[in-house]
Length: 205
Image 1 (cartoon, one colour):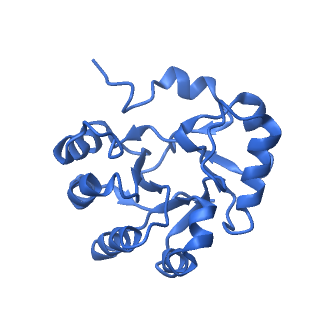
Image 2: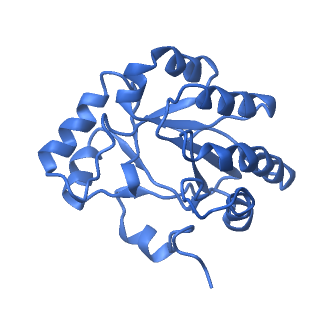
C-alpha cells in the first residue's frame, strides 16, 4: 500500500490543475530544497550537489534570504535555481487571502523568480488562482520526509529510492531540523538516481 504522506495520489495531482506536481515526458528528476538559506547547512547542501555536478532548486524563505544574503548569493553563484517560498513561511490554509498573497509579493523583493512553492504544501484555491497569474506553482510527488522527527536517515533515503521516477519532483529541506537526515540521504539519493540513468536538473522556469 502506498504511503500518501510520501507520494501524492495521481487523482489529487490531476484535480489541482493550477499546481505542478511533476514534469511529464522527461527523463529528469528534480531535487528541491525548502526553507533556507540556513547558515552552514545550505553551504553543505551546495557542496554535495556540486560534488556530483548536479543542480537543484532552492525554495527560499525570503526572510532568511534577507538575513543571510551571502548564502543566497552562493546558491545563485552555484548555478542553482531559486523559488519563492513566501516571506515568512505562512500556512495558506489558516491565513486570509490578502495576508497570504501580500506575503508572497513581499518575498519578491528578495527572491527574483517566477517559481513558487506554498509552505507545508497548503494553499487554498482562491490563493492559487491569484498567485498562478504571476508564478508557476511547484508542488512535488515525492517527500523525503527529512523534516519528520520519527524518520530515520535510512528511511529518508528509502522514500526517495522507492517513489522517485522520471519527472518526479523530490522535496528535501536545507534546515537545522532536517539536516541530520539530509546529510545522509542526499548523496545516497543522488548516486542512486544517477545510476538509474536519470538527469538531475533544476526545475525549469
